[in-house]
Figure 1 (cartoon, rainbow, N blue to C red):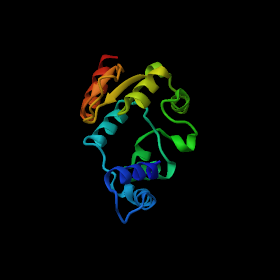
Figure 2: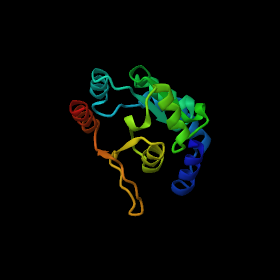
Figure 3: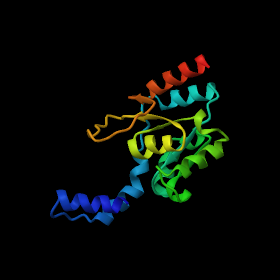
Figure 4: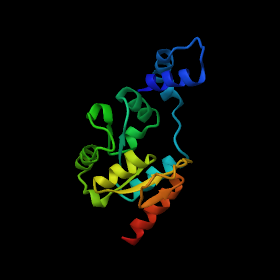
Length: 172
């Protein structure tokens, strides 16, 4: 919960402040979606996937009112075939049941799918446990030496994913 994140930040970084964790969390929940910014190449990637006939879905952990506002702000609700938000589904990644629910909604088999995410544990390992191939979008993240995961693909940008999908579809 964001209020817990802000409470910890205030405790560790700002010993005295006029802001409360609750006020910061409220501000985040009220205004975050207005600042949602798509990764470079998002529109081109979704146009390519549409042309290639690739079904798409989103699985996101978080509170419904926050995640849904971000999806709507980026028009992702119109670009994907389905989306699942953990709070409204009553499941969270890496629980394999949320991946299976998305597969069922898309009417596809796990082995036919590539799940792309930025969390080694929730996204990559969760998807793999559900039988999907997984791509890790590193998004500039640094991993600890103890992190052991083996994504089938590592991408550094949406352009990387776009080229991968084109290559896979052309060779099929």
